[in-house]
Each structure stands twice: as C-alpha cells, then as structure tokens.
Amino acid sequence: MHRSLFFLMLFLASCQEVKEVPPDIPCHLRYPHTCKPLVVLEGTKPEVKFLGNQQLNTLTHYLAMQEQVESQQVGFSGSFSEVYQAYEALQQQASLEELALLLRHPSPNVRYYALLGLSEKDPKNKIPYYQQLAGKYDTLNTLDGCVGSSGQLWEFTRYQIFDLSY
Image (cartoon, rainbow, N blue to C red):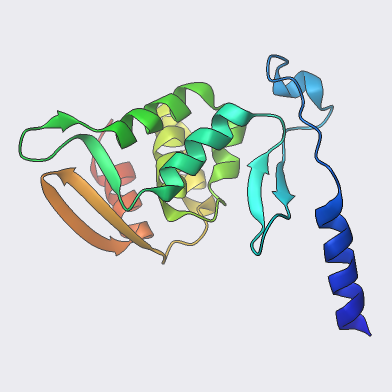
C-alpha cells in the first residue's frame, strides 16, 4: 500500500508542468526567499536545477558531462581548455549563494568547480565552504596541463584550496 502510494505521488509530481520564469528578472526579485534548487522529476533520475536560471543550468550540465576537470591550459601544446572557460563563466555569473548550492550538486566535477569559485570569490571563508562540500570521497579525474590523474574529490579540492595560494 505504502509503496504504491509513493509511486502514485511520484507519478503525479512528474506530470506537473514547470513554468519558465523570464531570465532577465534577478533571482532575488523573482522569489521572496533565496533561490533554492528544484528537483525536476523527469525520466528515471531526478535532476537538480536552479529555479529560473537557464544559463547556470546549461553551464553546470556541460561541466557535469565532462570526463574530467581541467586546468586553464591543457595538452602538450598548452591550448586553452573549453571546460575551464565554462567554469570561468559559471564563476562570473553565479552568486556566492548559487555556488554554495552547487556544493551539493550530484556531479563531482560541478562540486569541484563550485568550491574553486567560492574560494576565489570569498577566500576568507574557504574553510567553511570546504566543510560544506558533499561527496568528498567521490572519484574525480583531472587534467592539469598534460598530466592526467584520478583520485578522490577531497584530495584535489584540498590541494587547490589550501596548498596553492591565491
């Protein structure tokens, strides 16, 4: 009984239409409370999206789909990374609150870049941001220059945030 009730509620929630809010209105004016992530029930897996901010959704989706996080220049030739350029766009367009929400994103790539953005925008609070980072033991692949490596999210973020100085 409880199981079928849960699936019925899940089905009804997935059938509701999500209305788009015009993107030119700032987030804090559209919603009296802060912009919170919205779980959109489409397909087999819930997707975390920000209410009414399509640009951030596009950037976070692009970063989440990448095989690895990348430094500014990659490869033997040192060409500029499109992935890193997407991170820079995310960092410039997202507020501190939105970046803090991305610390709980399902993708370790997005969480990594969100923490980098927070530590660059607000360096005095990088320890509390690091403590809020979700999924610290998730696997992360990196490409720094021409050196690729793999490890846990906490290792790479700790190195980037605390061992390197900004």
